[in-house]
Picture: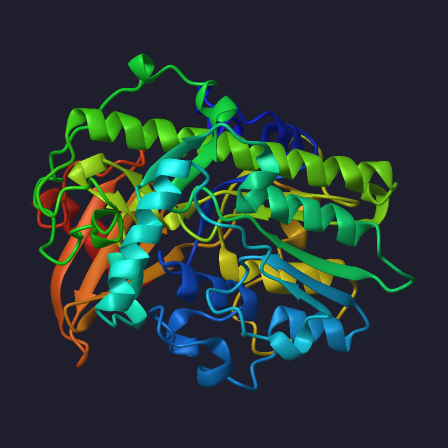
Length: 431
C-alpha cells in the first residue's frame, strides 16, 4: 500500500516523491513470495528453480557457495560494498564480499510491559531448556506495538542512521549500498506518531471469502502471524484484530517512508544524486486479511505483485511503465547501467530499453512459483490474467487456476475450467 501505487489514503510522501523523480513499474513481480528465496533470487539474478532455494533453511553460502551474486560482482569490479539491515535472510550470506556488514539490530519492542513479558517468557524457556525454533516461537511478543519513542529506537531508524553514516564515509571508489529496512515485516512495530497518521474508523475490513473454485494448494493457514501473542490459533481474526493489524501495517509503511526520506536527503546533501542510481524494492507482497488470509507464502497476485521504482541519471522522471518486469531483471539492469558486462548466469533482462522508452512492451509473462504439498505451483502474470499450474514432482499437472485481474489484484473466481476460457488456458500453457 503506497500512495504512488494508487492508495491515496497512505502517507508515503518520500516514496511518492521518489516515484515522481524516477520511473515507477506498475507490473513488477517477485519470483517467490517468501523472503529468503526472493532475496537470493534477486541478488543472484536467478530463478528459484536455478538456485534450488525455496525456503528459509538454505543459506546462499551453503547451497551456492560459488554464486556470482551482486555484492561479489560489484566488489570484484572495484565497488565499495555495504550491507545494512536485512538484505539476505541469513546474515552470513556473501559475508566475504561486503566491505561493511551491519545488522543494525535493536530490541524489537520498546514498551516496558512488552519487554517485561518477553523477559519472563525467556526465563521460562530457559528453565524448560528450549532451543532453536521452539525458543523463538515461545518467546514471541505481540503482533503490533505503538511505542512512544523516537524513530531511532526501533531497528529501521537505526538502519537509516547507519546508511547516513556510510554515505558520509564514501571514498574514491563507486559504492554499492544495500539498505535493508525491515518494516512492514512482522511484528508491526512503529513509533506512535506514525499510528496517529491514520484513523482506524476509516479502515475497511476486507472480505474473508475465498476465491470461488480456488485450488486446495493455493491458500495458507498463515502460521507466521498466528505465532504472535493474542492471535487466534485457528480460524479468522476478529474485525477488531483485523483493523488493528491493518492500522499497524500502514503505520509501519509510513515509518519506513520517513527513514527512506532521511537517507535520500543525505544523498542530496552530499550532491551524490547526479551519479547514483536508486532502486526501491520489497521482497514480496502481502495479504492484509484478504480471503481471511494474511502474510505471503502463496502465488496469488497480492503476494507476487511488488513495488519497483528506479531513479537516477538516464532514467526518466515522473514516468510510469506498464511493462511486465521481474525482480531477476534488477541485477542485469544495474550491471548494464554501470557499464559492466552482464554475467552470463543472469536469467533476467536489462531494463535500460524501458528507461529509454517506458511505453514499449515488456515481457510476455512474469513467472513466480511457490512449493506446496510436495509439489510446485508455477504462476504467470500475462496481460490481465494470472494463471497457475500445480504440479507434482514428476511434472504432472494436478490443478489449474485462472484469475482475471483487469480490475483488481484481489482474486475472486478461478475461471480455468470454464469452457469460454479453454483457448486462453491452452495459450498460457505454451508460454
